[in-house]
Image 1 (tube, protein in one colour):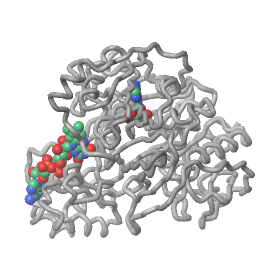
Image 2: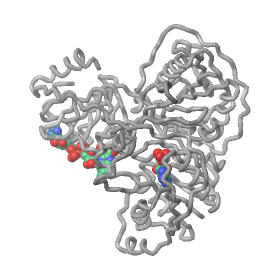
Image 3: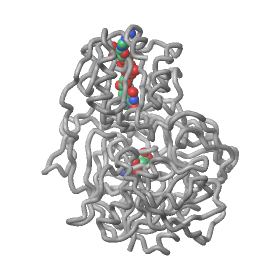
Image 4: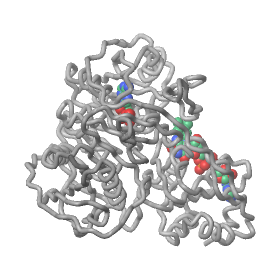
Length: 247
Length: 309
Ligand SMILES: Cc1cc2nc3c(=O)[nH]c(=O)nc-3n(C[C@H](O)[C@H](O)[C@H](O)COP(=O)(O)OP(=O)(O)OC[C@H]3O[C@@H](n4cnc5c(N)ncnc54)[C@H](O)[C@@H]3O)c2cc1C
Ligand SMILES: Nc1ncnc2c1ncn2[C@@H]1O[C@H](COP(=O)(O)O)[C@@H](O)[C@H]1O
């Protein structure tokens, strides 16, 4: 079994969101970078569990990004995975990233490709589906549970107001979210071992670019909270009804 | 040239968010001087012609589809795009769209904007506004391709309802055999899906334990609201995972979000700060949530809530 786990780098969840260059670029100043939580907590850990169940499994990590992604890739390797591939591209367009992942996936003949449900910065939820389409593979999004029996996978995915159980033959692309696995913390052995695991850098293939960010902006700040006395909660009901008109 | 909107349904009924998408698609069509058409897969109890009330001129129906498979859906929608000559394709940004729209984007070589919150700006190119950083910011995305796909966030565009009856025509699609088999569907019946709710009542660790959730569920029932919770509450299994909102859960934008005993950590706010009105009930006047709130009560849940309900 060969699993490809897609790893993206995102600003820490507490990072200050600000923009530079005439609001066209995210301001990196003082920002801590982390592994996108969906990639780290759910898809990577589930892949590691599958390897624990079947030690002959190979796990490759892939990141599309420039050299500053490497600390995050090493952090992922500290959790698990046999080697990592970084495609040296700074293009942020989803199709372009998906094309790079698909090119590597095609070469590597993977049985299983895991992505996170979404990146917490771009919130595209797109790359898994795009990779699947480029490779003409089935795609199961929003997986909350993934089990394997030979080459047959049983996947539970979240749908609006419930869950759906899917059966599919490998190879398949799966996007992972909460429920797939429990978050792990790398141990000392993992951290030390990650330093010597192979991290290959490959050059990007030529791709089209479908979209570009033209600018960013921040939502207007709130006017301030109107406090109601705890002894008169009926006043809150009145305000919501008459002033905010939401009930 | 036309605009094609994918109409999603559940249990034989068109989803509310699809009416928003239909209204949105009709408005885009109007702005581009063309007409909006719709495609709906599988049988519905709702009459497809009624989509005319949302400005849809023609509805293409495809019968005999019972389960969602991203490849099957993508192929049918791509055939409909071809047949209608659509160059803007609209989805409501829900779990179905997230499974299909990215595939369709590749198949049609059409740039995708997932999570749109406003009509495209077409004066100079084609620019669509979407949420990024889990609602903490917006990005204006320029779509460079000839065809464009937009997945509209639920609760971001008002349903515009008028009169009108859409023409309904069976669309004769070539339907592939799905590679994914849906073996069961398990739905929580009688609950309003969180992503579609206009009012959400949410509880945090301040409620002390699952035995006190009546404050949340009773208020929700009274208001016709969906229920949500903070992440630790789902982690300790006081509430089901699908209720977890925030940066690593669901991002929502209801008209009213009522937070009971939630501190308002930045990761929680990320998923709810696009709510139009936020009410916070918390005993700690320093709780960060008050800075993001419109209305608040500084008080003890166990004293305040019985008076509200
Ligand atoms: C990477 C990362 C991602 C995360 N993602 C999310 C996410 O998606 N969603 C999320 O919610 N969190 C997320 N978190 C966790 C987040 O940081 C907070 O820890 C969490 O939101 C706190 O939940 P809470 O408000 O329910 O609990 P607490 O922080 O414990 O707050 C409880 C609140 O209840 C109040 N209270 C207590 N008793 C009473 C009473 N009797 N009456 C009235 N008020 C009372 C207290 O004053 C307090 O403000 C994430 C954290 C990290 C590091
Ligand atoms: N630059 C990248 N390199 C590798 N994987 C990525 C990259 N960007 C996104 N992904 C994967 O695709 C998933 C969905 O991303 P998105 O479509 O941007 O929301 C993420 O959770 C990652 O698993």
